[in-house]
Length: 44
Image 1 (tube, rainbow, N blue to C red):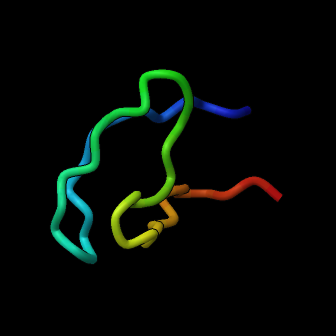
Image 2 (image 1 turned 45 degrees about the vertical axis):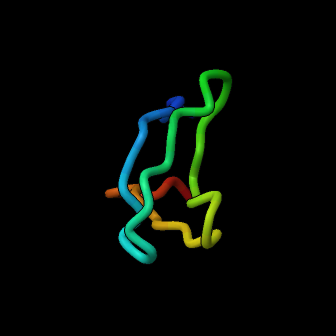
């Protein structure tokens, strides 16, 4: 089941603040394009 995740966060790679999109989920930093896999148990 897909769960929308639209939270602002500080990128662990470049340290910049990434703002909410306000319409869909964000899974990467829009400055350095680094992404972080956050599923505890990914679905197969």
